[in-house]
Structures are given as structure tokens and as C-alpha cells.
Image (cartoon, rainbow, N blue to C red):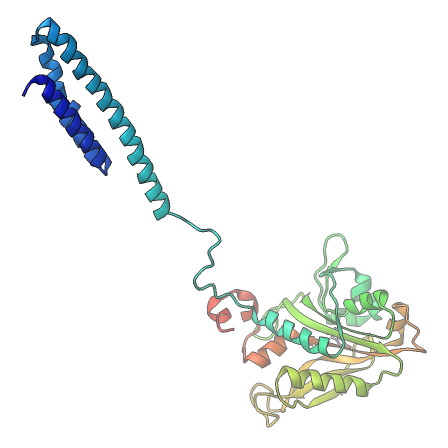
Amino acid sequence: MSLYQEITALEKEALAALGAVESIAGLEEIKNRYTGKKGALTGILKGLKDLSDADKRTLGKQAHSLSTLLEESIASRRRELENREMQNRLLAERFDALRPLRSLSGHLHPLSRIQYEIEDLFTSMGFLIMDGPEVETDANNFTHLNFSADHPARDMQDTFWTTDGFLLRTHTSPVQVRAMQKLKPPFRIIAPGRVYRYEEIDASHEHTFFQVEGMMVDEDISVAHLIHIMKSFLSQLFDREVAVRLRPGYFPFVEPGFELDFSCLICNGQGCRVCKQSGWVESGGSGLVHPEVLRAGGIDPDRFSGFAFGFGLNRLAMMKYGIEDIRHFMQGNLRFLEQF
Ligand code: DAH
């Protein structure tokens, strides 16, 4: 084989190998085989110096142009292979930020659950849902609710004060004041929300808890309306016929005022540990809205009357879901929360 034929064969062979190679490692191997220190083409280039001048000119030109061709072909094949490798990597590592998670099992806190359920029940009875701020004025939390400045009942509810004279509402009753300022009678509202008391905490007392307030104002509202609404509310909430009992109770913003009890759901009124053998569970306060409170809200007490009530949501949730300690609600313990 003449050197010319050798170079030509080498070119064919090298280009075929480059066309077939599928990996960078394989490409390095080819590069070594032809143009490396001991490569076939390198050997030929080194031998050129021993040729005659005429052969040097023609074969030298042929060998050098093959060297350039291989260099360029290797570089371009390298770019192709690198691109393909990158494509494969991108495909393999593809991350779809919008793909839904396989098992995203979030759920509501038991207090939210009971709150939404209560909102649905009262909405179906024509009540509006109202909201008020947790930082309130003394006027809305006390004065407009007929607690006079030195009224001993202010001490019934130990209060967190802010340094600039506001307070954390001790009950949801200030929303009654806001309702009267905003709505014209007749109206009926409920107002669920968070309240605060400066209290020692134990299994049945929290400094932060939830209430649901209710108020209905119309002509000729009586205790009969109150009892009817309470009975249908509690029976629907607990999915069974619940008996309601009113005992006299004092709250400055209602007259007459009542403590509202319902028949114990644990023992069906037979008497058990939860109801302290009485068959009844205390659930909140209620009464007919005091004329002074209506007047402070811009409503004529000679024409309109109303009832109001306030329940502890935690207490209702404890009864409904069988929770024995009020402190569970605020602790964020997953073993508790995951049961709902
Ligand atoms: N706000 C009272 C409390 O937290 C509960 C209450 C009693 C609300 C009587 C009322 C009511 O609307 O009429 O102790």
C-alpha cells in the first residue's frame, strides 16, 4: 500500500469511527487512536521528514489536511455528544413545579370545622355572618354593652390591655354593638371568633379561645324565639334531639339573662362524669337584649326587642368530637390534629 493509499484509508476509517461513536469516552479513544502521541496519523506526520521533497509537498499536504479535518470533526462530534448528554440529563432531572402532589391530605382544625358547620346552620336560618376585630375599644367590649365604668361585672372577665388603652376582646359580644351600628332592624346575625382572657389555664380554661355570638332584633322578639332557635341549632349541630334549659344568669347586656344548658350528649341526660351527674351541660349565656344596649346601638327599644346568645366554641367542639382537654386546641400537636 502506498502512503497515499494509507492516508486515504485512514481518513475513511477515522471518519466512519467518528460517525459511529456514541459517547465522549469513545470519542477520546478515537482521538487517541489517530491523533494522540502514538496515533496512526501522528506517526505518518512524523515520518514526512524522511520523504523526498516532491512527496513531502503532495503527501505532506494530504496528511496535514487530514489532521485539520480530524481535529474539526472530533470537535464537532464532541459538541453533538455533549448536547445530547445535556438533553438526556435535563429530561432525567425534569422537575414539574405544578404537578399535584401524590397525597396532599390537609384538613381543617376542629375549631374551624365546627365554626363552618355552625355558620352553615345559622345561614340556613336566615342569619348573616359578621366579624369584628380582636383588638377592641373599651366602649365596644364594655360600655356600650351596659357595663358602667365601675361596674363590678368588668372584673368577671379578666382583660388583656394594650399600652395605648385598647384591649383584646374578652368576648364576641362587641360584634353586637357593631351589628347595631351597621344594620337596620329587623336583622339576625352570628359572629364567631377568637377571644382572650387573662386566665390561669387548665383542662377547661384557656387564655385564648373561641366563641360564637348571636343576635336577633325585630318587633316582638321573646324568650320563645330564643329557645326555639337554640333548640334547633343544637339539635342540628349534634344530629339528635337536644333539650334546652334556661337558668337565671346575670350579664349586664341582657334582661332577663340566662345561663343556657343542654341535655348531656354523653349520657343522654342520665347523669355521668362529664355533666357531673346532673344530666345537663352549660353551654353559654343568653337573654333578651337590654333596652340600654339597644338604645346605645341607635335602636328604639319601645319598638324593637331582641335576643342574644354567646357560646364557647371550644366547649361545643369538645362535646361534639369527644375532646377531654381544652389545651389540645392551641398546642399544634399533630397526633391530636390528625384525628379530625
Ligand atoms: N359574652 C358573654 C361571656 O362571654 C356570653 C353571653 C351571655 C353572650 C349572654 C350573650 C348573652 O350574647 O346574651 O361571658
